[in-house]
Image (cartoon, helix red, strand yellow):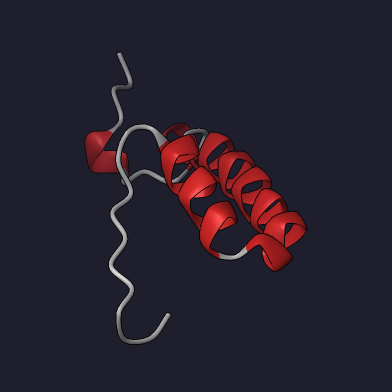
Length: 61
């Protein structure tokens, strides 16, 4: 983002989204889309735990 910008993503991403929208009002739609896409990605990533695993870590009992 360049010099003078310091952002922290916490367990409340809406805080960061609101901060960015205040700092970059001309990018509001892009910021909304970014957070929507990231939430979708996060939900899909949680599914990979059951798919992408080594056979050594799977319980076959």
